[in-house]
Image 1 (cartoon, rainbow, N blue to C red):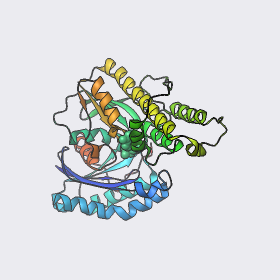
Image 2 (cartoon, rainbow, N blue to C red):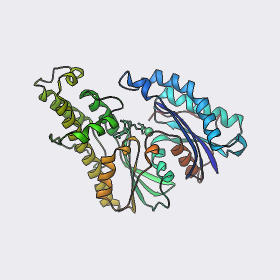
Image 3 (tube, rainbow, N blue to C red):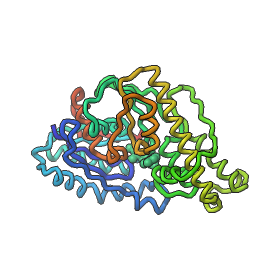
Image 4 (cartoon, protein in one colour):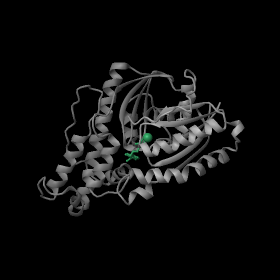
Length: 337
Ligand code: KG4
Ligand code: ZN
């Protein structure tokens, strides 16, 4: 079964064709990072406009690269949320229109769960149950999959997602956008000099990163000898290079320890056969190493399938289609949460 997947939930316009949920025939990603970098973050209106320009060429390229005609496509899948409304509308409208015009079964799927299915593109014979940690710009989530079709969320984001914390800390200490890869680079050169407290959450499997983000801000202010009334956007100009690197290293270490410790708690309680990483933050090598050191059987997507892509959407729809009817493309909405 060959599924065309479409993804446009944030700042990547992507289309991919995946066979039987595992074999990637093409995967095209048009990233808007350069456009948004000048503003220091994603500007929703600009993102939506860029999706409009990119969506048709990206879909056509996915078909060309897979060397397939529309007749050979068995179904169309799309991310219907969560994400930015203007961005989601472009991808879902394209997918709905194509499903109607080309008369194909239509499968809208959840973006966060799709990240987990990116693992099927890079790993053979995954042993279930799988405990998955999905960490992205919008979510930090622990999910238990009994099999490829059934999952339950054990815990989720209560304030800032971990990727958001990477991005915001990077901004405060004067690193570029997106912050995740910049913090990772800086952390390699810095010392883990500062200790930050780990948050407590009511549900032990939930995540909270806003306190850590503020603690880094306060430490940065302390380094330049200013009190908390000093505007945060000016801190970066006054930090020494060494302080910037040390703050990045200390923040990253604390964030990774929080993610690893929470996953360990869930691992002890549910005893899964496999632990999986997924989502943009799973591209972080230090996080990948921490998981490899702490868990016996760990899977993670190849780097290209960590950040937003459409192959994971097509893979997700393949498994979803095994026990769900296609949706009606005339009557399908986006979901924002
Ligand atoms: O999954 P994703 O592409 O988009 C969302 O669904 O949000 O994740 C994007 C997030 C951003 O916050 C970005 O800073 C983070 O993933 N990220 C990283 C790395 N690469 C991307 N965070 C830490 N280390 C990285 N190497
Ligand atoms: Zn994502």
